[in-house]
Length: 445
Image 1 (cartoon, rainbow, N blue to C red):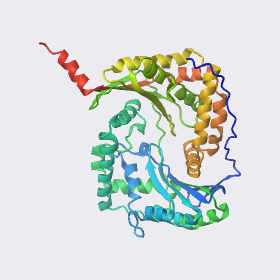
Image 2: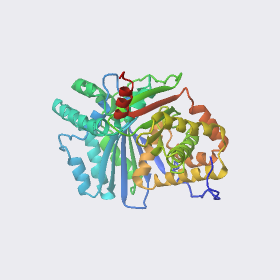
Image 3: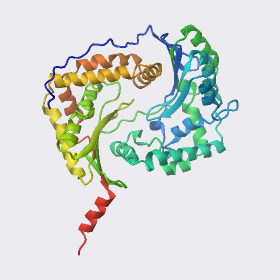
């Protein structure tokens, strides 16, 4: 691989470190964790209420249950009807949101300081008084079915996202679809909901992160007064599920109503806490991080076989995936796109990166880091993710030093370790019309 002969120098910005003196961790008597970080640069406060439960916690036949719980917590309490939480926050100049993913369920808000006491009161009420009724369960099921239809079934490439996870994981529950399988959504009962909610959506499984313009002593006292008397239940003892080593490439052909072929490759990688993650992020950028990246340049610029190409890392509590994709031009063959992608991947294993190319990628990763830790809510989210996914929020301080320490040799070693043929999962999306053409050409005339 080569770049234009431009001398590149890594810029040296100060790393936004979060020391133990800045972040205070308080454990409440009921097991709830509070993390606070004062930031008086602006009269705002960011809140992240994270429950350590995601789709990976769902039993067979109960996929989508975490998402149902998230939606139930938006349906109101006896004190505040559905929509009141958001209306109160918005009327005070703030905003709120929620999401559920593989590992966690989050409720977020960013508010003026004057709204902090109100926000804490609302969150405590939601945690303690969410109503789990049959009527609301039926309503939430319909909401989730519509979301699944919108984001998965009716989205052009929605099924690909679920299928690459389902193909890549055989034992680990990361294979569970976040929006649930339709039959599971139909079969989930009120007893299923209540049992799951009682286990996971409770103080002992909760982390509250607050970042902003407040006095830590005052906030700790207020949080204790609102949350500490909410009863907890013993957390379930769950076995550690380790995905067995993959023994060979898995390849799947998909047919959906699209006239454009797509190729997706997924490689098993380490968990978020692993030190290899720095080299893996460099690899992602080298292969698919920009229009100058290897796969994009090869398929879009040089051979012109693709419309676009890219990739993402699923950085998760348990070992995740490095996903690379190319959306090909009309009439192109998926196998041809795959072949060129694999050639770029293999090249990374044997050809050392130039100093200029490696420095350019490190610059981009460092810039992205600061862009993603520029606001209070971004910082709160980062602290919460690292503390829950790795057990130590201060590992976020190591992102830039570890990236700066990555060498060309380390990149090749990581590529050889993780980007293997036996650990590769491939989905080729073949347009329905191309499949029909192949079938017709094979008919006896």
